[in-house]
Image 1 (cartoon, one colour):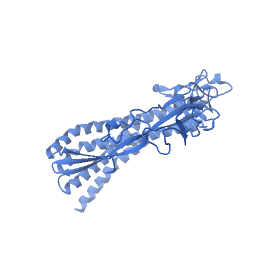
Image 2: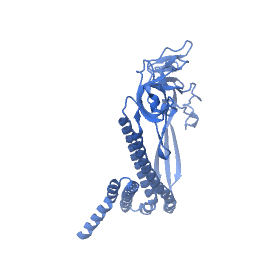
Image 3: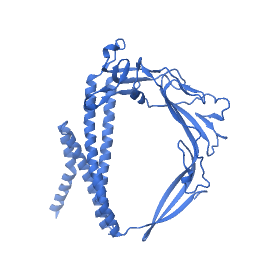
Image 4: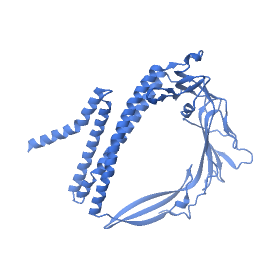
Length: 390
């Protein structure tokens, strides 16, 4: 171990065979809940995917280009426009003289602190399991306060009790594109950031110095000490002349009404309101939304499948517990049970997906249903072949 590291040894009871069987039986109830929850997630996910596709198709049929010369003709309509961001307010931090014409200004604060890392090693000692925990300590920059009083070895690794400066985000009250005011939700979609790498000199009397892209508070910027603080800035949505980046263009699809953009209501209580960075056509924006819908659908499908597999593993743990003490046989049965759970989870997940799509895309649903049965047809064929060889 290195200097100042800590080492802790504890012991925990190693459950016996009957105790492990009892735990497995109790855990089966938890596994059943997880198993059923996976069906709910998959069903909800497919329904949301279908609904989102239908809403995007409906919105695509409604949207029109915004006529900048006759805006009143587009009042109450779902419109598309591309234009430069503009605000009447310059955001800044008077403490350091930072000022940028942008939609959002973020001040980030980091402090140099001790951080504890732990590694656990378990050793089987018959009726007990020995747990050896090794704690190591490194100094790192962190934007959150690390409480050293919770360390296993605090004496040589004490952090300050608070970070002396706060991080914050300023947001422009009014943002416009082509003279039309953006809604709060559209402003919230301006999330990309630019680092401010050229900083003005610190104010007179400040104890800060400029180092790289930071205002540094500490005696030796090249050799940081615990408690040193550095402050840096990021901005979102450049809306004027600046050294950070050029004034930014965005593309919007939203409802135009009385000189402002709003969300456009659709059926089932859903609404659309899109903002993308750069100049995008109507079709490009809807293609991007469809891609997001597809990505979210596949992510939740994977989560649903993993939950189902986890639930089945917990439910069948009793089988593994009953045989894991038998040499070789235990390993073979454990592998077989895991493989069976994996196959069953995949098949049931695909079957659930197929049922959800049956009314909307019958051919797609039928093909998914066929794929869900392939592992069982394959297993049945192998079993039949093995029987004939006998």
